[in-house]
Length: 112
Length: 109
Image (cartoon, rainbow over all chains, first blue to last red; front, side, top):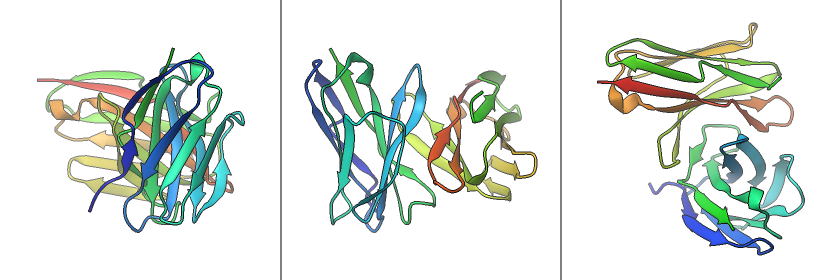
């Protein structure tokens, strides 16, 4: 059974640009959640999608958005990038959203 | 005060020692997760608990709902156990995940 796949693994952007990250969950999982990890703030919850609907949202500005497709794959987008957006972005999938989480390897974003 | 507090922040031990990492939380929860993160970033879910105790190999996790406290124990520790261990809680009602700051464990051969 394939694990959670995140692409791209590494990317470098400049301030003001936007970025789109992709997450393919484990087959059969309908929930995808996204997290930001920085040295200063640690791991923080961004949002969670279940069956194409955003079910929960963390305390991040509107520049951070996401969506989920009918095949449960999810994307997150960050617009107007700031230096502080440099982080490891992790996604996790679960069957129903309230069970065990399976994490991807993450996408490491550097904003210059 | 953080909603999820872990202790210790750093722990260095000799191979074979019994390890305990603690997690205290201040909110109502529907579940508590123990996660392991190795250098490079990948996170593995070790346990999800809502009550009692769970065991997997050399790892044991316990939770006391009344005291809002959980512990992760590692028996017969090994250098490959060296990692950051993170406690996270699923908030009751909104089901958002809140993380502790992690415990960096180093096991010396």
